Image (cartoon, rainbow over the protein chains, first blue to last red):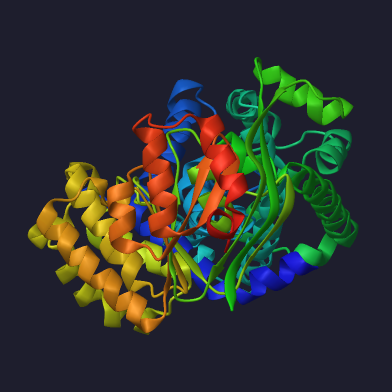
Length: 265
Length: 260
């Protein structure tokens, strides 16, 4: 509980540092923040090229334009993989903070997730225009876009917990960073970013064992299939239980390793 | 009033031969590493408004004690109480190399918890003090080591913390800048800031400090008036006395060498 109190008191500092991080990430590049938009566009178009020209497939998926279907899953997956990749390095990459200033180290995962999320949200707003450009007025933002607020919030809570669990492990065991790097690719293919579950069973297994699926499918349904997030309420409840579990484990890992961390950086 | 209290502080570092030993230790609650005692049962108090020196040869545990007081490292046992805010200035000065001077100012002030308005008020004054001119807009990795320490010092003193810790940071600045720093430190002193000054050289100590302590291989040798402590420390550095003789002198004159 103390943790949440500290965070709440520091909320404006956390926000400022997250914004600062975003600025710095793109500061020394001529195109600056435009890269945040260029990257997903290039990725999605190359997938589109591969499927459409290379495999001569890419017919409409459930009646939706294939390229828009690709965007739905890819946008959130790119954010997910960025945040997962950062998680084990959250503390080392901010070692100045940990070793020179008395600063609540537990806020670092929040700052990192938040800075990625800010960029993502900005890019999404531009994407909404691009969807209309590609798909026409059927893809104008509607009431279902309110879902995004829920998914952004849930994503934030989920991945802060995830980073709190992974970050101390990354400090104590240097292999964690390589391990995470190695599993990102299989995670990508095992999450239905470029495919749809063909059977009910696969969909169920994904829901139970792959929490990343929640965000991918949520984004797609919001963009293309006009569904509210609470239409499958058991799945939402299940995800929040998983989040709770991640926090319980994460906090206990953090508690055990907190004293050791500054000595090992 | 004691602004800093260091009570029976011991700090062990664990040295591991293999990285996997850390994992084993976490899993099995058995010790796999070797214990290195950086500090052993250290006791001293610093009164508000004093300039306190910590001397010792390389590797004696000076920097460890600063980190403990700064709150970035935790003691293995014992207790440290600091009443108020602390700002640490060490050789790296906590400056981020890829950020520009301006960004570093903004970054450190934000971390310290200053509000946007307060940062804006101080900005000009920090830039002027640092004497960096146009370099302030360049990334810090293009700075010379003197420039880095100027920036670090400029930021650290403008944070107006209750305790300012200076860890050998003035070693690189030129004499002109050093004099300016001395002047500024005297101003801070007049305002009632407590300054903790760390060095292996006794010359600087005598110039700045009111009181001092000497740490040798993790043990507190003596603490008291700066002139007494430096005299005995110098006699050790100049090899006029052995540690054994010094320890004997200290034991016999506890009223001089063991006072806060």
